[in-house]
Image 1 (tube, rainbow, N blue to C red):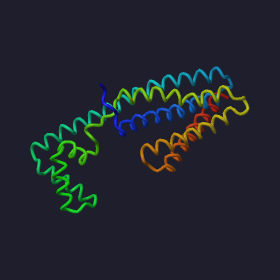
Image 2 (spheres, rainbow, N blue to C red):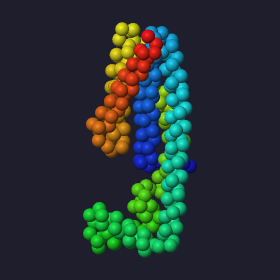
Image 3 (cartoon, rainbow, N blue to C red):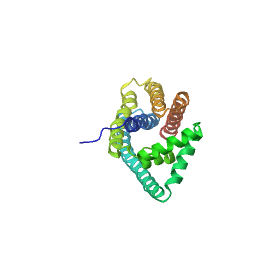
Image 4 (tube, rainbow, N blue to C red):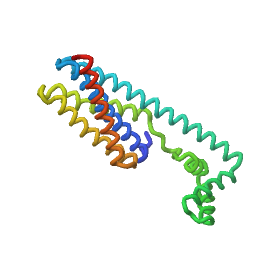
Length: 226
C-alpha cells in the first residue's frame, strides 16, 4: 500500500502544477502573440501555439522529473553523510543540534535537554533536519511532479491559445495580452502562498516578466513579418 503523502509533499506537487500552468500561459502567449505580430493567419497562429504547447508539455514534465530526482539524490547523499557523522562523533552532532536550538532563542539548559531527547528519539532525522533543513521521511515523488506539470502546462496554454484564435481580429492581441496578465497575476499569487513568500513581489515579478515577454515577441513578429 502506498504511503500517504505529507502536507509538504503535497505542496511540492502543487507547486509543480502551478509553475507548469504558469509556464504554459507565458510560453504559449509569447509564441502566439509573436506570430500574431507577423501574420493575421489564424491557422498559422493556432498551429504555432499547438506546437509550443506540445513541446512545452514534454519539456516541463521531463524537467520536473530530472529536477526532483536530482534533489532526491542530493538528499540521499546528505543522509549517508550524516549517518557517518553520527557514527564517528555522536556527541558533536548533539552539540550541533543544541547550538541550533540556542540560535533560535531557546535557553541553554532547555536546548541541551531538548537536543538530548530529540537525538535519542531519532538521531538521524533530527540531525539531518537541523543541518540540511529537510525531513528524511518526506521525499517528493518525481513521477507525481512530472505528471502534475504534464497536465498543468497544456491547461495553462489553453487560455492564450483560445483567446488569440477565437476573439475578433480587432481586439484579439490586446484581449489576449490582458487575459494573460490577469492569469499570471493569479498564478504568481498562488505560487507565493505555496512558497510562503511575499505575495505582492511574486505577482509583480510574474506579471512584469509576462508583459516584457509578450512585448518583445510581438515586436519581433512585427519587424520580421510585416
